[in-house]
Image (cartoon, rainbow, N blue to C red; front, side, top):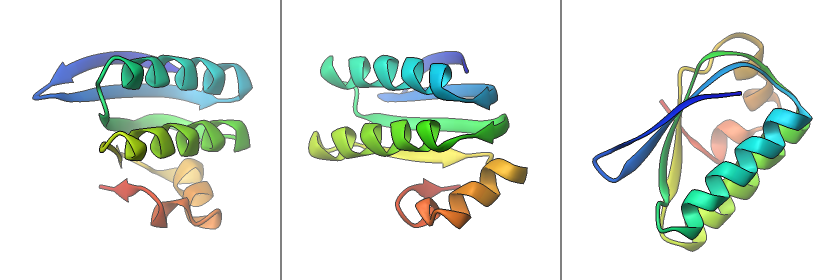
Length: 100
């Protein structure tokens, strides 16, 4: 789930924690698409406290990335580890997102 969102140098820094399933994915999609609609299109999403993300969570990130790119923005993901990192690699989403 989203732990904190803060604006730093025109980039929204989003700290996630726990596991990301359907409910958390829906909240993430709604929240970040709302920010894009208000002109914020650059995101740094910290996954260092995330232990799992399911397909709905991955799908939400893809939708957010697509909308951000359409508006000249991007998503950078940091702190991937464990099973969450494995799922990004297995689905090859590590090729779609900038991973730090």
